[in-house]
Length: 113
View (cartoon, rainbow, N blue to C red):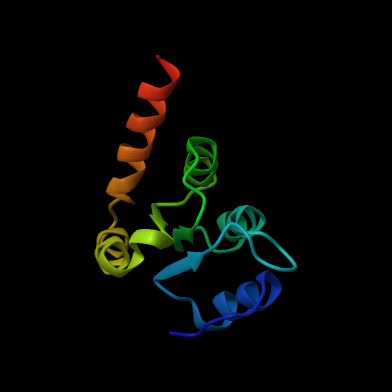
C-alpha cells in the first residue's frame, strides 16, 4: 500500500496506482483531505475514500460525506475500526466509527442540560 507525505504526492500516487480505497486525513500538508476528496471525485470518481482523522466533530464528518467519502474512522479507534472500514468500503458500503455516535450522544446530553 503506497503512502504519501502530503496531499500533492497523494494525488500523484492515486493517479499512478489507482487504489481501491484511498485513506485521507483532514489535516495534511499542501492540500487538505477535503480538497483532495473534491479533486478525486472529479479525476477518479470510482475511488472509494476513507477519512482517518482526529476530528470527531459532526461538521467534519458531514463535510467528508458530502465530498464523497464512504468511511470516517477516528485515529483513536483505528486499530479496531480501520480494517473493518476498509473491507466495508471496498465492498461498496459505508462505515463510520461507532465512537462518533457515542461522542454525538454525549454532546447532545451536554447541550440539553
